[in-house]
Image (tube, rainbow, N blue to C red; front, side, top):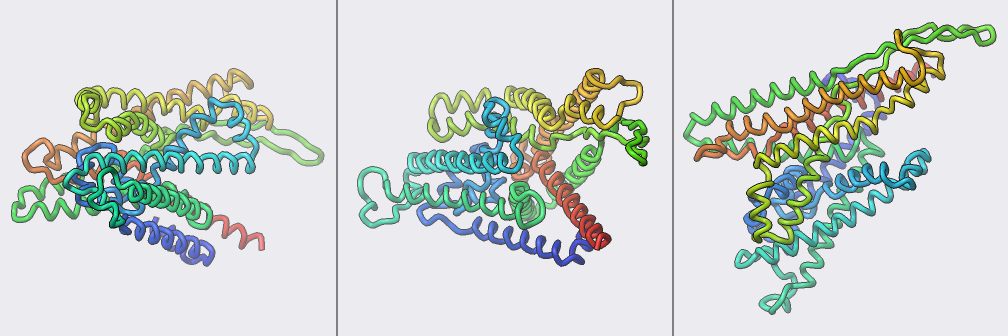
Length: 444
């Protein structure tokens, strides 16, 4: 990867894209430290500190939630909107037709996704502000911005409205930055913003763990063991990410005019983890949604206590549901990415065949069977990544003892999977652009 970066900086065009990406990331990180004037960061952390939904929001937003800053909501509304639109495209025929209309159809769906993201941001901002006001009490989580609201009976409506507008504006700004990174920079902007948020939160958390050790050096072995486990997981993720099943395709020779075509052998690559981290994100988002609603509107109620006890994060029911949903979404996402019928038609159209398999329906059935088997292995891999390392991280951080170093809350195998996937994708993007520059030079 270092060699790829070195070669990328030799090209002026790619170098400009990298610098633009870094500049937009700097703008994003600056926004993560601009406070919302009406919010008390200490009170916000006290109210939401033990809430799993807001812990995830804080990790993805790079600590903006804990600091009560302009980018508190971060990119999460846009991610949720994207997931909703992916699901609706399969259910609503009009959206499905729109997705097949080429570039114009994609632009329309992107615009609808933006609108849905803003609506979700408004809902989340209202829920957060109302919860802060209801739970603030003497902590003064929301400070009135206008003199006539101080000491007055009732809620500071104008201050709450301005706070909501600032949160929604910050989320819209993050969405705009991610699109600019995608358009003018390197890689997918949404993935890069999540990548930066996870890295910044993890780095801060690990530095805090070293500070907590203090004079008690016995706990330094916990941190060393944690780092070794993280490295082992990174190697495991990279190994699985590069694993694929190659299905040989042979093309018969065809004579067209005075030229002969075909007669070549190639293969169809089916990746073990072709869905990436999306099934985990889908499953986690679906499980967090009822928890978010209960936390925002029914905090402290009997429903909140019941859900936290029997279905909340860390309960056996939660982990079972997470595993089932990861399996289901893995197959769902595999169907979106790989269509055996279309692949079979393309192979037959160009005079190709899979050795030992007849063309047409037998080929599509064979591809579907192979894809289902590979998807099962990919789903099991995602289950392992989502569940097992979590308990290891909690044990190494001292979560089950009286001395909790705290870094397990900011580190997760899912986060590592996102970081590795984004890093590998960036490397591939750079390699492809370097190759295109070489082709252009050859053609000139």
